Amino acid sequence: MNEKKSITITGASSGLGECLLNSFSKSYSIINISRTRSKCEYNIVNDFKDLLGLKLKLEKIKIEHDLCILNAGTMGSIASAFDVNHEEFLDALKINVLANKIIIDWSILNGCKSFIGISSGAALKNYDGWLNYCVTKSSFRSMLLQYQKDIPKLNFKLISPGILRTEMNKKIKSVDVNKYPDMKKFHQTPAEEPQKAAELIFRKFSDYFKREELEIDLRNENEW
Image 1 (cartoon, rainbow, N blue to C red):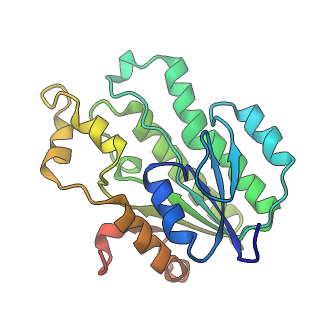
Image 2: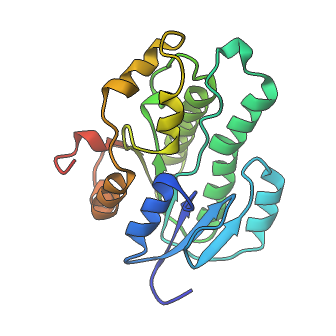
């Protein structure tokens, strides 16, 4: 690690996470935690479904860092709730909720006091066929709000970037809108480049932590 301050980004090997790496690496040393290696200087590689493996690996690693951006996640399949088997549902819970609990606790033990959770409108609203994503993102949101309530000396912000041009967006737009009518929104609303969201978060995150509101939608920011 070099002399720059360190931050952790989960899922920095692709999508919005890689864009966050591109932006934040201008000023910080990046610790990536994901199932694949990123181009940053320090990678902790572990499948988020392997909770025990993740916990044991992190227990051996001591790296002080100032900020943790919880970005990694999975959408899971798009299917009727009844058709989602419990194993797949459990995997989504592991990746989107339980693994983040392990990472938050590890970050706290390593001196981190500021956390950004990449949130979604799906944390507040149910969409056709989105059992995996809606339930786990709402649980992720509630978990971060609970941490803030229980440990007020820490700083938690939930940031929603809106619809981005990512593999997730491609997946959503590939499904039959006649079967899942809510998906029409993703055909009608232009997707933004994830680097735009990452750069705005990088430029404004210090200001976000000074605000009283815990949840920020980038689409409502003047700079968007």
